[in-house]
Length: 133
Image (cartoon, rainbow, N blue to C red; front, side, top):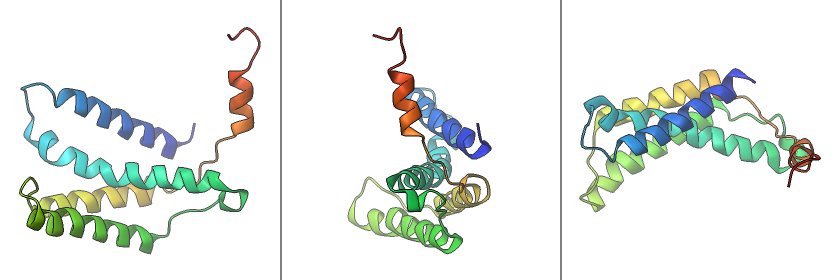
């Protein structure tokens, strides 16, 4: 399994674990304030890349350009840290969140921005293999 795929699965697992952990009364400040902000960009962009790579064969080797990653991080930051806090009191502006989004963008660009094509034919054959009900 490729390194970028493993990182993506680990981030998804961390997110799910965090959501379960969030239901308890015990809170760790860093996790409560910044974990989701760091892993949000890599999870969103890798999920998007996975969909793009599997839409049509001409996109199998598509990668998100660095300028598109920068634009995504900027728009994401502006929306969640500048716009939403002005229109919804449940949100607060925090410059450290922007740093976390940027770190997530860097992690995605450096380690996860690789095409990943899922062989659906092989996957369907796996599901229909003999002995399965």
